[in-house]
Length: 268
Image 1: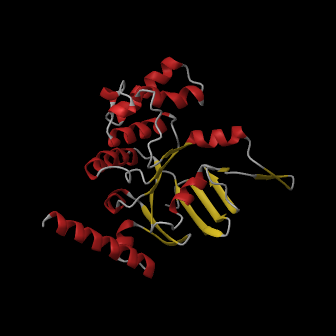
Image 2: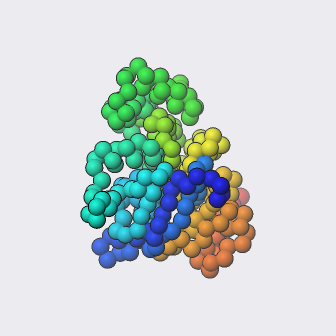
Image 3: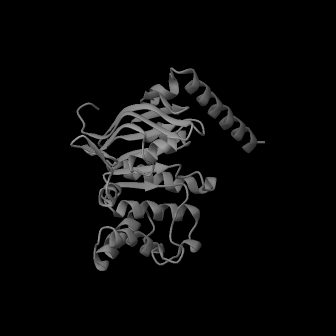
């Protein structure tokens, strides 16, 4: 990976919520075209880590660089200068994010939801925005649902519209924060398949998920977090077959136990 261009760089990043120290000395680099899955138990700092990348959560110390540009305040002539709204908008235009909640506008059709950012943020004319939005809906397999409002779409379809909306902005990075956790089990596959196709196209992706099958198949690396630290940073085969840290071993053994229990229940 050293020959690839760094896309996201964490340099000794710390983040606190009051007395709670949620990110502790995060130091890692994600390269252009890499798919990195962030795994770990609930409360380990995974979602906070993701949200610092596009400044939804400002950090307390350290530095984050996205595509060569520092995220957040800059030091200019010895003074700390906060980012302007324009700086933040520019960053977020290049970093798409998909949450577990779909966050679609209920009064808009799927097409209008995908168009909205193009028109209001990118200032694209409506005809061009409509063409781009249709292209993105087709990309996620929902061109035939363009005129449907969210209430008429399944959860999986709503999440695919949310992905299309993020892709419409032509981001350089895609962030996914537990994108399937709010879905019924039978709908998870359709969202993961779209994410797989995006990965195949070379998009830089950071994915917080408990879907370890996706991590095995798609990820270039797995970051395992616990109590605000990255304890493992390894290719999937190494992480799943030879986890080094005891907390990672414990996490994987619990996953295997739950999977075995579910399989036993399915066959009971």
